[in-house]
Length: 356
Image 1 (spheres, rainbow, N blue to C red):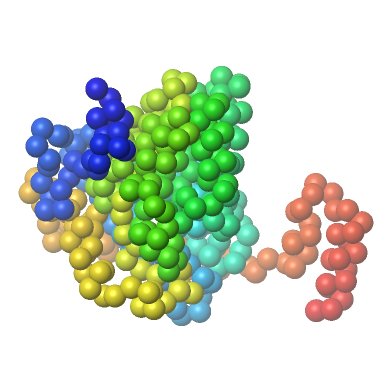
Image 2: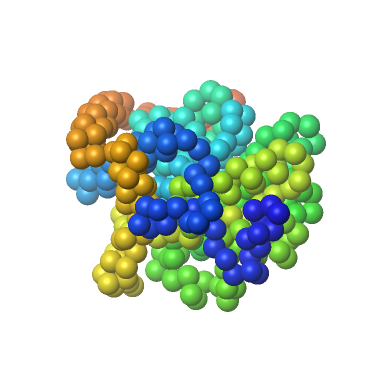
């Protein structure tokens, strides 16, 4: 029986391998080696530290509005680590982890949030689209690229990341419908972090799970413990293999929690209580993975201190490099819309320059 049959959304089961206390579910095993677990935990540590630095930079007025990833590291690291060269990622606005896993430099991410459009330019050969601020619009792009790849016979995977709030948007349902009909090689990864800004999951949808929305569109759906790196990886791996072999799309619901604000412009104390946050802290993806590694003798305080210091040093340099990038010229707003500026754009550019 496949994972998607065993954990069919209507069976009311959530897929989990690594429990919060750092032990494995009975008869289940990690989908990769202990060394790989160590390496991925190290990446998660770096991502969390980079996330904290971005938040600090915003509070210091050195970065614009930022969307923290705190608490969702396993969802992104576990899923993105499955993807291969040539695959495509369509992020929303909280995908620091997925971007770094795909090879986007941290400097590029920081430049984006500092308001420099160079931060939207992925390095050659890395198929990560720019941040999508409009909620839920980008799954359509993932389906379109996936359909094109299918027509060309290119065995790639396209993956769209979005939150639970996006599943209330019409674009999400249109994308799911199209993907179901044409069996595109698309993975819809919903990071259900319990809140769409201030709207809680319980009044976002009447569905018992988000995963079960897949049934209406003729594709597989699965609900996974989004704070379990092992479960996220295993479910995404099976979805990717299915996509590459022409067997269609999958909706994965990663149940997780957003510990921080929706963005730095948000005040979560207005709509949730500290007691709620405290109940989720023991479920933190970093906590359980650290406990697992400690039990294996692969992690201790000395290793954590050393790797934290190394990461902080690297992040310090990235901040310096990003802040040293010159402010873009105002003309750039107009120059790069088309290969050659239209007369209207030239007129607008001259008007703006004359008013500065």
